[in-house]
Amino acid sequence: MSGDSLPLAVSLSQVGTGSCEVTVLYSELHKPLLRYLVCLGLSSDEAQDVVQDAFVALQRHVTSGGSQENIRSWVFRVAHNRARNHQSSYHRRLSESFNAELHTVPNATTPEQLVLQKEKIRRLAKALQSLTKNERECLSLRAAGLRYREIAEVLGVPASTVAGTVDRTIRKLAGKCHV
Amino acid sequence: MCEFSEKLIAWLDRELPAENAANVARHVDICAECRNHLDVYRRVSETIDAYCDARLASSVERRSNPLAGRLAYTAIALAAAAALFFFLARPDEHLRSRFSAAPDGSPAIAQKAPVVAAPNVEKMPPAASASLRKPKRIKTEPLRRTPAPLTAWPSRNANWLPSEAPVYIAIPADALFPPGAFPEGVGFVADVNWRPDGSAQRLRLQPQLIGFETRGTRP
Image 1 (tube, rainbow over the protein chains, first blue to last red):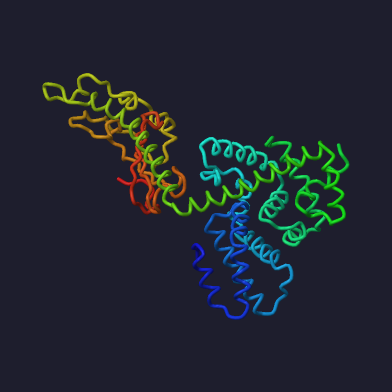
Image 2 (image 1 turned 180 degrees about the horizontal axis):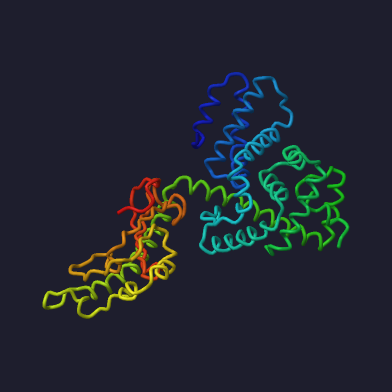
């Protein structure tokens, strides 16, 4: 089942206690989650499905009295693992996800800005191809606004590893992108 | 390289403990090299953000117009099919002129155009003929008939030997064009003309709604 926010809104409206927190969390994390999943290579429909699944799981988690500590990383971890269930597209597209042609560049108001921005993104996309899967996942989670500790929880690695990976990846990209 | 450079990205991400962050902040104020590095890292981070935004926007755009990509594929496929048809049709035109009726009403081929290799086929020993016809994947019969003179416009089968049955090969559309370019169930029937030496002379593709289980030779 796919759709914009409607299916998820229906699911959340049906829940009772705790739905307020989940709804607030949904409005906060919906877009970053979608962005992260699309950057992993999922299609828009698949990303919507995964986000919906993640929040349904969150609702069950909350109503069953599960821990609400580090709930942001919990949602991202669930979404990350469910994204991997889309095996056919995940592995195929992770390698090519940064290779896709971009038709839309937000925040480009003039044609010159659009061209410059596209060129920057094109160079970045080329540089991103040289990264490992772990480096790209780290970078995508960082771009989704997660702290190093949260990224570590999502990926199941130590926070120091995340810090080192982010540091190394940004330097690598800075050396290749010339932005 | 400055000893603080390893902490710059973590400082930029506000990931350092307060005490370390204060040290780095004081150092950045006085170190031009670190400020330069920070500027580069900040720009890379902004570009990554812009890239992720663009990917999301492009993804949503594609989703909101799901037919666009399919129509583009279909247009490309149709253009390719048209080009293929055009080039394959040209020999047909050539054959039309060869086989068009003469002013006296008799078939032109009987007077002017030599029947390609037909006399040689008749003279060939059956074994040699069979070996030359080997590439053809249909059940062959020994050539024993003299090609009858063509008395009427032979349509697209003009250069077939009259004793031969046409070969129809059903090809799924997905084997020729990108997946999704044609609706499921659409395929092509390849209409193949063979030269007497067994090589393919002309291939004509006709889109059809077909059941692919019907592939094979049909009369």
